[in-house]
Length: 452
Image (cartoon, rainbow, N blue to C red; front, side):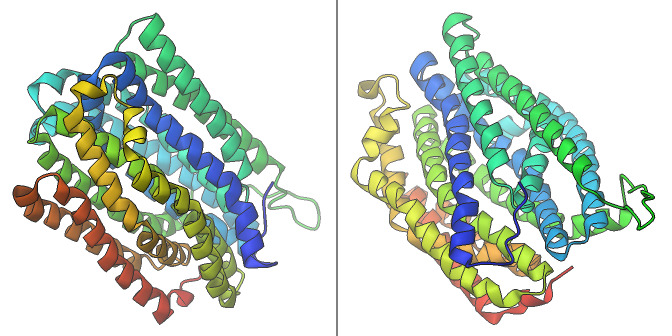
């Protein structure tokens, strides 16, 4: 059901709103991590390395979908908060049409540029074929990824965080089940893992789209007092321009982050296949912790957008306090786990720990270093959520680019001298400086001016 976030105590509202989202994140990360776990346990370190080498590229394409999703969520949340229902329905259909077109373009681009991208990253010859195979199958499912994300983003923007959870639980379990079957029973190897993801994403997309269409159909929009229903246009250039005004900065921001990760990956690739496997595991586990605390920030973005749209910006600082507290609560278990038992977490991915000591050392060192600074990053994510929810994308991008540029710069500076120890340190330097910048932008309060 849709939820109004403009009335009531912010902490209670955000807590109830983000709790289903937190479970969604857990299953989403199970979805993502299962590929690496199954590859490492049932196929071997080379398969794990192939997925690791492919991961920054898949994330680059996925971030385009996430950026479009962010723009859609801001517009839908603000229109829903302002009760402008005709424009709301038009915004939904415009976003879906845009996503369909963009996914087709990216699929074609990905298939054509797959091997040149991997070659430019200096992917080792021993895993080149597997990496290309995994990437190509991923590109074939780009349409599913885009539509699924847009549908779930619309549900969340309307205050419904439970429906995406149900779809994610189903698709995650389906993906894991199919991956195990395709690898252990049918013996498809790494291709089996990729095809399992393709099928699971396709099924989830169909379910999400079907439910969204029924939800939109039930909205009584465009009915006059005489009972004459006016046609709501499926696509509006005016809405498209506003969507792009918010989405393009978000896409650029997220894409540049992924481009930064690609540069980092190019440094890792030069260290060899064990380093690729180790960083892949450490980075994915770290991402699990980051997106978990980011759940509160995502809920705060919807809270901010709805209240800005409703003309209640004075409620946003209360949301900042609630979002900060929730972010710290959500990340606390990851800080404890990654500082105390990082090797246990890493060994979940490794088939034979005795022969993969190098990969384990890289992963555990990265996790321990990053975990110390997770509380700092929590405040950046909360500030960014308010800027994003208010549509203040310029300031949002500045803070994020600072993080990205410093992270990449220090990876190149530190790793030649201290090796893989420099990876985690470089990430943390970027987080600290970007957090300071985000806090300054939030305190300035210019985000209050960005209602649609």
